[in-house]
Image 1 (cartoon, rainbow, N blue to C red):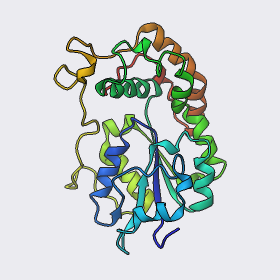
Image 2 (cartoon, one colour):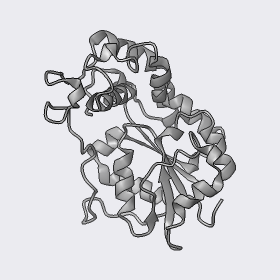
Image 3 (cartoon, one colour):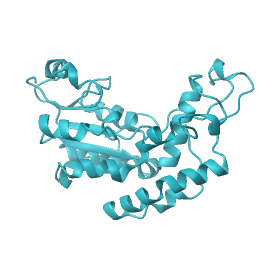
Image 4 (cartoon, rainbow, N blue to C red):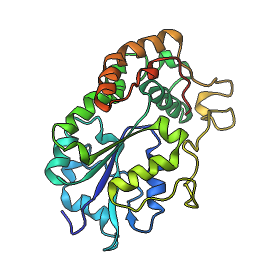
Length: 257
């Protein structure tokens, strides 16, 4: 591999403020994280250990080394590869209401002009590719694969809902998990921006491909109902796994992009 290997990895989920987590961890002088997602244990494993190790060569000897690749959470081979290469790695999993996550992902594509404002017609949300793309929100399924290979204490599972309300407390949990000193909640330690620095889509920042009269994508009542049904069993199983009732995720929600 390399003389420096990651001590911790943020594995996802997508659209769950993991970029915000990375920016805040990078503010600490004792942490090194490459800016780019490597996707090594998912999409780039064939590149080999030397390719992966090159991302961490700039780290100083005293620094805790980590990376963030959101593709790891739902990739079927990533947990096994991580266990084989980094058996003692500390894992961070940030989860967001899967219905909100799906809508936020659609809005991200909309801003780039890659999809229509009519979410029900977007193949990644309501069409033929929905099963493949929505499977990213089946968190119980994905966490189970990690827990089959890693001790529970190596995983720190946090919720976007808590980060939205108490970012400093959540950040302290993660700092403690990777071996950093925590900071007093409400103290002077700055946070790197709001949890969701990107606001809703407006005509000013919408992609030109979407057209000047494009509306902000929303879920229809029928599609939201289908997504609730799709995620219901997984959310209940996740609630049991984490010891926390998450069924409020299945109620009426409005996602921010």
